Image (tube, rainbow, N blue to C red):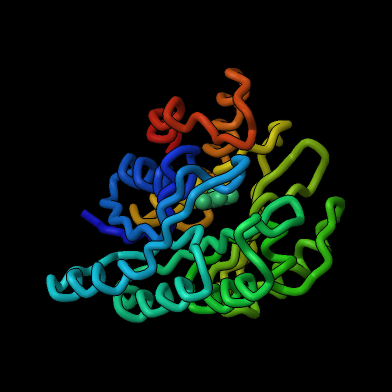
Length: 274
Ligand code: PXL
């Protein structure tokens, strides 16, 4: 069985990061080892939250794995807590990332704004981390911050292509821009494979709601499929369809958008949609 390491926080309440990655990647048939970067009472879109920084645990934990000669077929990083943790994550890539795929979701912003816990120094460091990845999946807000591009709510295909061209320069083999809406009522992704000089665009129907944690759901699904040997383009298409389907199902129960999505209801659908 393939084994992936995911490095991101544990938010005890509110579905995101590890509490999405673990069930989704496991359901898709890959062992998912976790390295929690921080322990939060709940994710940061609640009114307030506690954070216990777990940076001092990263090196002792990984040393035990080195002693045990543990290998990973991939590393998937999401929400990281601090600049120091990004440095530690880069070292993890050097130690454990040689045999597999390094997938970086540079979680730090959405809807034109950085998340509350982050500033521009963090954003610059996170951008640097992307240059050490094989696959990166920023959303438009993150891509704008990473490439010093003006964020626009309204845009056309040439704006997206320019953004993608700037991101590709960071160096990842596969660059996928998420949350790309190229026509009225549609949304999806646009990606580029540097080795093959190949673009891929996928659009599905836009569900009229934005939910917290959907970026984590998209990335975890894409990672899970890629680990099973699926081509990146098919993995991204399935991840986009599954995320849209989950938003649609969540809406039926009309939850608070900032809380999270009901992926527990749709996980069995993911298995049959492949
Ligand atoms: O879904 C991204 C995410 C992950 N982890 C924490 C968050 C967020 C987004 O706000 O706050 C703690």
